[in-house]
Image (cartoon, rainbow, N blue to C red; front, top):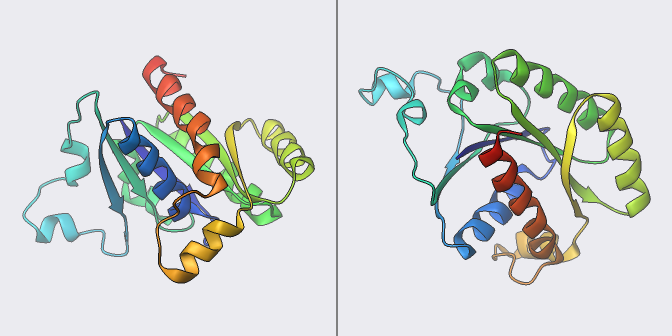
Length: 187
């Protein structure tokens, strides 16, 4: 399974990637995390590849590649998502984040990606989560989960430490299960 994690700058993409990777490892998956700085779209050629290596990457059932995309949508023009099974859109509580999620959803569908979901990030309350879910529903974007604001995540990030026992580490469990289940069933 190859998952592209997209969203607005500062939305929590890298946090979601880390949480998913940790959960996958805890479940016995072999995990490849790709920090995708697509500002050099020809790097694969310089390295001697005819096509971006992600396209050729073949994974077994116990392997997952999670690609932490650069902020925004510019990477869609480079064709990276054509090699991806699923797109996970990280949405924080802001109008701009919802607008970008809608754009990512349309671009992903336009290149033939069927597995597209949103995960809420840095959500301060269940009321805000419900409002965001309603907005995503009106845009035709399926919400797969919610990571609430977690002070432990911010503290760990400030100290350069792993997330450890952060509440978000528990919240990602159901999200991970849903991603695996839906990706394997094609929904």
